[in-house]
Length: 219
Image 1 (cartoon, rainbow, N blue to C red):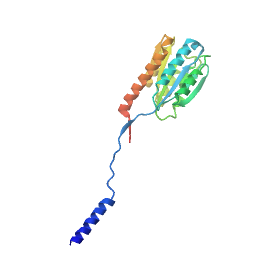
Image 2: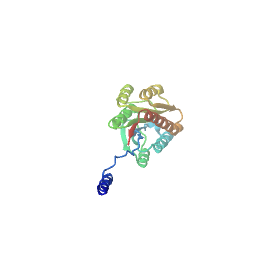
Image 3: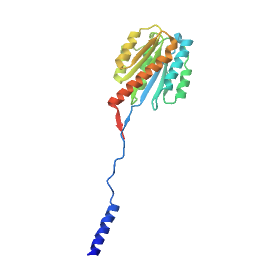
Image 4: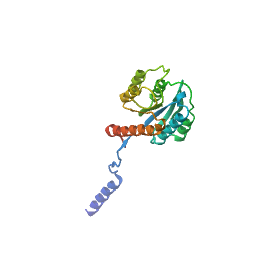
């Protein structure tokens, strides 16, 4: 009898060693923010000559310096033409170099430049933001203000604007307000850096609120 009991005990102990234990879930759920894609739209029209273009470059560089990882930015420059200066990248040194390469000439096709920015963002999966800097009213664009408002609302793009000098600020404020963005203006070209930082802080603050309300969870 004792031998039988000993045999049964041995078998039970062997089964406990061999049988796998139920898997325990040690995963941790954390908030996963959406990636932000910025298109920085830079006015390089003739009126930006001299101190204005220097201040604008400095303002964009301060914006780039504070872009958070893993967010990316592209740069579009405009005057009588609209050109992609640099495509989306997280490499800040390349973005700084692109800003330094912008030279002044021509007219002010602001609306066409914002439309170009929206087209660059169309294929991106994440939050999409256009930040433009201009010192004058639009001249020569094929797109109208209503066109770009409809385009960016349809794509879910936030429009942030910085206006320096004389232009229809109210119309541009309406564009930003419609998309959930922000518009800042000043008569002082030296304030461009401060305005760039202000709109960036506004966006990231908004982004944090959106994340808190709608953020995705990942393991």
